[in-house]
Image 1 (cartoon, one colour):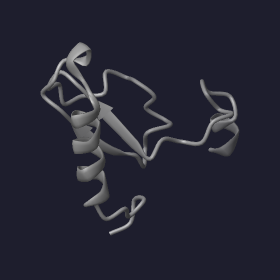
Image 2: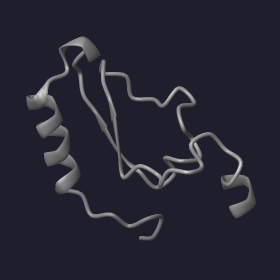
Image 3: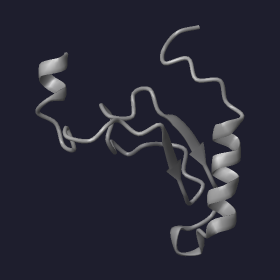
Length: 73
């Protein structure tokens, strides 16, 4: 699996801890599927042009309240 990870888009960057999806959609649309395997997702019902610091702070607050298990129980 490590070999595959070396040849994907953004392989030189660490995987994201948090993925924020705007517009109220609750799907990834094949966006960074490999890289976000252990990311936390926050889905917000705001459109991207309206996304501001308040929404970002909300997403961080949700993320902060989560217990990261990295695939474990």
